[in-house]
Amino acid sequence: MPRIQAIKEFMVREFLPDVPADELDADFDFLAAGVVDSLALLKVIVWLEDVHQINTDEFILEPELFRSAAAIDAFITDASRLRAEAV
Image (cartoon, rainbow, N blue to C red; front, side, top):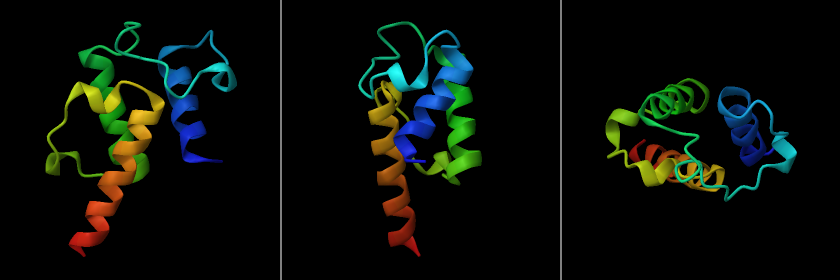
């Protein structure tokens, strides 16, 4: 499964149960729509750490990183690249 789809499925399962993941646009703004608040952000961060092995302590986490599935995907790409460069 493509990573962007996995992100959308996680967000739907956790925060938008009435929306089919396939219908959720990758650029849907979770913050503007009120889907993601500070507690939801923590849940997303824990998911990133667990599923994608990202040590979020190494990053300055701004809400903008979690604005959409596309933004989350970009953060995962950047974090993975930085982790690979550090090795």
